[in-house]
Length: 392
Ligand SMILES: Cc1ncc(COP(=O)(O)O)c(C=O)c1O
Image (cartoon, rainbow, N blue to C red; front, side):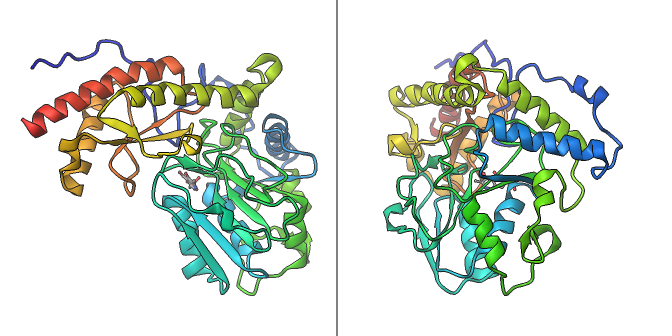
């Protein structure tokens, strides 16, 4: 059988979950006037960092009651500084359903370690029973499981009048999914996911309840400098005004400012944040419609309302593929990705190395719907060619 190669390629074939593609029309021109080669502690440097904080509040619609800071070591740094600074005085639940959530389990179980710990764990593509969370304990969880394609549909499982602190790793959810600020005491993310920013910097957003915890509790373990959010028992307010714990990149900060402004200006009356959410939803819908009508592939997440609109994870269900052993399945899926990459069509859309073999296509708001539509025939082509090679 002749398998016909598609002719139309996505205009932008970058489908990586992070660093993800930059906003449409991005150029480095803004760097001409950027605060490069200046100290981050100079008035100019601080002004740039404060602008990131102010624009984040505006574009991400963070309430005035919450504090926002730029912290070291990307999203991982932000999650771990919250865990190390706040956990201990109460029992802790860690809810996890993919690679990064599992890392927070390791932190809680083997590194801190916490004495009164309950693990709510599920496999890739699924959610654990979150109704077990009752609000009297602290909670660490990932809003959108980037490597498993499953997200919490809402925060109804978190009581508003809880005593525990909720720490939410929202790195692939922020700017794509609604975050209910009254339910989340710590929200973290990094710039290189849904905003197409540069890597290395974390954002941490604290509710008044989180600040209360920081000011009323001193952990028994050592706290590295890059985790310290308090000074003499009080919140280090300067962090939330543009000071940082160590040296940030002003180049990356300027880049992020440009994207925050760009997103702010999209969407007309409904606003940039909603525009980003709607675009991710529309991109996801294209992929889901295709999976629904294609017999050999389906969403790794079986429950429709739990499906991610950013890292859309897909599994191959063709019976011939299912009959292969795990390493042959992995090799098959990787070969399809490589074949399409080698044609200069699309990149970085293989499933995460610890996830079930298949594809993960980044669908967030900065990705164009037409690019996803144009990717699909290539997925069909790659699958058909690899079937012919493998099952002839
Ligand atoms: C859910 C989640 N948490 C944490 C991380 C780690 O993020 P970073 O590399 O910004 O530290 C990632 C990266 O993909 C992620 O998807």
